Length: 69
Image (cartoon, rainbow, N blue to C red; front, side, top):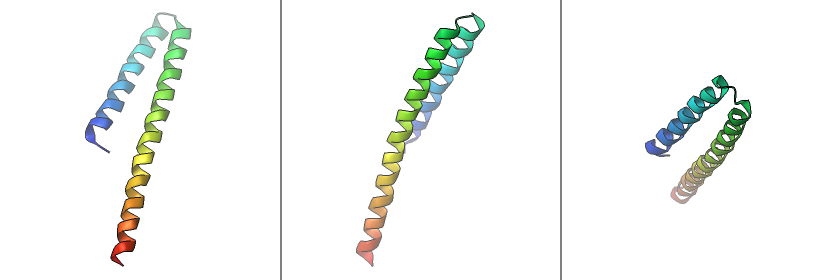
C-alpha cells in the first residue's frame, strides 16, 4: 500500500464529510444520504482493492518462505 493511496482515501473521505455536513445544514437530507451512500460504496471498493493487494503480498511472502526451506 502506498502513501498516496492513504492520502487519496483520506482526502475523498474529508470531502464527502464536508459536503454531507453542508447538505445536512441546508436541509437537503436526500442529497446528504445519497452522498453518504456513494462514499460508503467507494470506501468498500477501496477496502476490497487494498485487501487484494495485502493478500497478494502475504501469498508471495509465503511462496518465498517455502522456496527457501
